[in-house]
Every structure is written in structure tokens, then in C-alpha cells.
Amino acid sequence: QVQLVESGGGLAQAGGSLRLSCAASGSIRSINVMAWYRQVPGKQRERVAAIGSGGTTNYADFVKGRFTISRDNDKNTAYLQMNSLKPEDTAVYYCKADVTYGPYDYWGQGTQVTVSS
Image 1 (cartoon, rainbow, N blue to C red):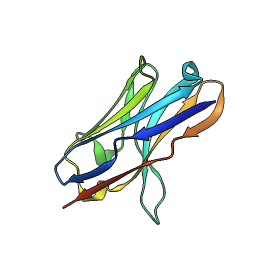
Image 2: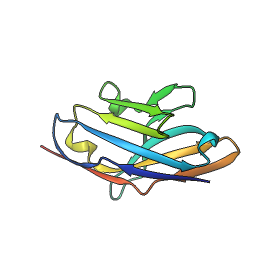
Image 3: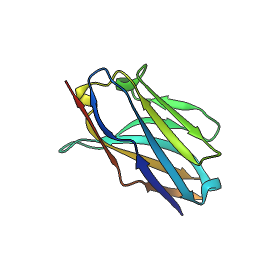
Image 4: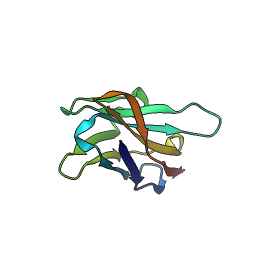
């Protein structure tokens, strides 16, 4: 059982930056991959970035070179540093954790990111 809480969303101007945080609690040592997703109204949720337990990262093409995913094991927290923000980055951003003990996904409640032109 894993609980995830996102924070750090808000309003930014195009070209600006935000850093999202995902604080995990519960069965922390069971977490394998952590990922950030985003969703806008009327569209499917899409994966933004992922990071494995060993630090391997993967990014969606639309954020490569702009966003950086990281994790701090001491703080049980994953981060998404978002630079060079674009209005099309506006979405609710969700944190997801995969666990080693089964095919279960755990989701946070989401945090709103709004980018103005």
C-alpha cells in the first residue's frame, strides 16, 4: 500500500519554471518505477516522465530537454522540474508509483499546472 501526495503546481508564464513534488508514504521499499502523468479535459491521461528505482529515466518526446524527473530516496519523494513551460503544458499532473509485489498502480490526487502566454 502506497500513498502519494503531489504539490508544487500553480500558475507560471510561458518560458517559466515550476517544480512538482510527489511525497510517498506506506510501503516505500516496495516502490519500483515512479512516473508523472498529465491530463487535460476531454483527453486521455498521458505519461510525461518516469524514473526507475535505479535512476533510469524516460521522457515523452514533448518534454525532452525541458523537464527533468528525479527522486530523493531519503525523503521518499519524486520531483518533476519543469522548465521552458508552454501553454500546452497546462494540465492536471499526477504522480504514479508501481510496486514490486504486483501489477498495482498507485496514484496521487493531482496538482493543477497552468501556463499563461
